[in-house]
Length: 279
Length: 291
Image 1 (cartoon, each protein chain N blue to C red):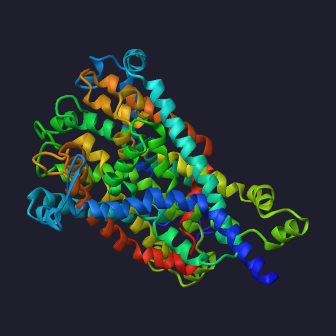
Image 2 (cartoon, rainbow over the protein chains, first blue to last red):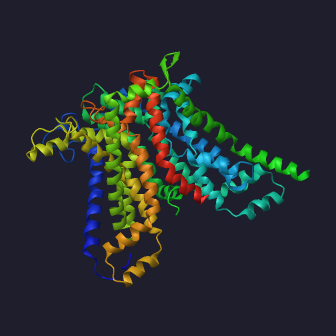
Image 3 (cartoon, each protein chain N blue to C red):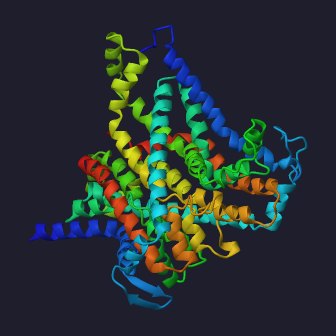
């Protein structure tokens, strides 16, 4: 704002920034507590007054989690469900987005409106009929049952259409004049151009499916078919009363997303704003 | 003749490109909605379905727990969305024009809880608030508040869940606002500076009105996200004490998967669907205007 040149900060500016920065750090404290608690032994974790930093560090809780729970299997399930859902969203979404953006066909606008209207409807509210469909397909306790409903969302179409709209028509025409069919034009010329959009979509969709909870809980009922989030949540009801053990489980569930966030931070802002704040 | 054939072929190509998305969309989104509306008119016992008209809706409206769930959900939506939008506006307007490193630190700190998910954050909060061994309960005792069980108290449970949900998710909204504010044309601020406006005046009269379209979008996605609030309820309170924190989504889930009342659950789903549809109208309008 106004003061690249002005030397003095207004009090409001100073106070508001101190508050925002203070809360930013405070907001991370629960995660600090999660992480340090997971390294304490079962007595220290509930000790009062508490150790603000673990007096002795132990990894036993992590060993316990991986030994008594199929945590690796859960992690694999989560990776598989999030990865495959996202790849499918990208493939079918990119095809449809390309058609809505560049191809002329009857009913194009009205079909697009129908797709977009569905964007806000969360699948959870239709969980009963959706579950019966999955049941009919024999997909209960199957990873595929967790995947398909995620692909129904029009989010990919919506996000990628914006990116296709921004590509020059001349490029597509040149490719067509060179004799390339529509499919080749799409796959070899246009798709590489919208790579930033695909990157953003990948991250956003992956994280969203990873953190999805209710639907995965309903579909994966057997212990081995749970995803990491759902499996971890069951530790809360676990007979083992050791809070350090529960916190170790929660840490295991938190780490993959933390890594993804630190690696791809830029894409997050990019993708979210590409989908949202176009005025 | 040739032209018509070409147009026909163009149509066909277009349809083929949208076919996969369309098929999955119809099967896993449109059909469940239609089927959900149908099921809400039936009483379902395993394979037996009996048409009961609007009985499921009637029984909902005579169930005090449903009203409690409806009321709680409204309270959650109003409080959480107001807190989120208010605080995010405050935070984003404070930092958006500062240096990039600082902005990225603020963004990251608030966004990390969003990333690690409501499940993990609910587990931590449940530990922090545990009456016997939680850090917050301990600090409250030290501060002379006596033995506290905020999640077990009818008066305190809602504010606590509102706060936990807000603190976990506000980062998403902050990111969106920062991006919107960075996009506001600089000359607007320069004009305000020439007029001698203070920072607070500039924020209030220029910045916040400039990001108005984002505020509409942000409010709607937040309302819809809070409408289906579930995880935090399941992990922190289980809807208790005495249905004090039960929500529509939790009520729907219990009816469907605990009490086997599929018709009733479907009716709740239909009601939530209508609310969602109603809420998204303004946003849809503005999105369609763009396209």
